[in-house]
Amino acid sequence: MIGKTITIKGDITGEENLVIEGTVDGTVQLKSNDLTIGQSGRVNANLSANVVRIDGEVKGDIVGREKVVITKTGRVQGNIVGPRVTLEDGAKFKGSIDMDPASAERTQPKPVPQSRPMAVEDKPSEAAGKV
Amino acid sequence: MRQPIRFRRDGAAAAPPDPSSDAGSPTGGGVEVRASQLLPLLLERFDPDEPVTVLDVGYGSGETAAFFSRYRCRLYFTGLIDASELWSLPDEDVDVYLDRAFARLLEFPPDTYFDVCLLWDFLNYLPVPALRAFSRALRPHLHRQSHAHGFGTFKATAPAMRQATPEAALQYGVHEVDKLSLRPRPDGVPPQFSHSRAVLAESLPCFEVVRGTLLKEGTMELLMQAR
Image (tube, rainbow over all chains, first blue to last red; front, side, top):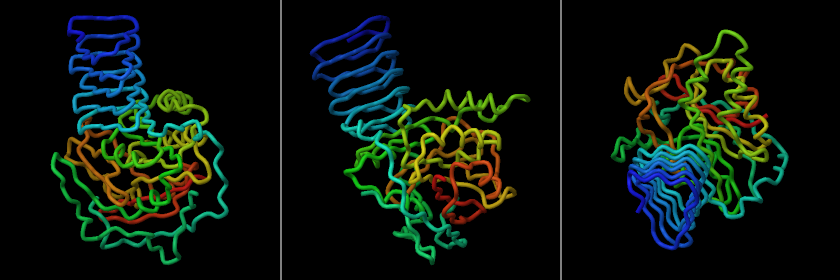
């Protein structure tokens, strides 16, 4: 655990679970373990771990090989890559979430459509929602 | 293979939601679930095996992330919804100012093309110059099959968008293919700008409205396609 009063500038690697309650500038890479950014954690770093759980603040890219969870107290600005991403109610996240391991394919040009849909305007409907 | 959205001449939705569920069902935690008539037209065409790129102008929503996790998806949550620089405009060089603001706020990789743009009620929080700048900023990231979903007003004099409370606007998410989730936003209510359909069409040339459903209280649910 990296305690509340600890500040680290640099790269952190390891093969055990880690909880960060302090401040980290750099990178954090855990080969096959879990990483938790605690409520008091302030991290300006790219993160990579098996499960990444964020209760504090992160500015950086996140790779969660199994899962990424941003809890209700979490604040994240960055890009997330992982097969499962959970944003709890109250979490604040700005950035991208990539849930496609073959994302490189996405940059292929898009096809031109054969036809365009008709412009149709609905009349007010009883089924319309309360807005 | 992704299919273009097609509409029947009678205007019927491909999979209309259950009207009985339309009144909105609270799910606890301040979340309301509301049926959408147009969302299925936007979302049902996607094949889970095909990659999908989605723009959401709000902050990350758990429901939206969970919904799109069934696809090979990249989601962009931009947080534009409370970017105050988009409505607090300078007196001069407004277009230059706004182009710079959007360039800073919408930093996408150059080969990013959105299949779906979830605009929610964002257009109602932009003055006309900002609408035009938003269109300029977004156009390079659209393709001919890009579609957008959002809410507008039937005419400029229509009541302002619905809010959760007088102090809180709404945060939207995709709850299901035909249902939205709505919850109060913690960041207060931005100033509102109601635009008529004509003004919206002129000020947001990157999209045309291909279908609109008039809702109660003079608001409209809109489905748009890139042009």
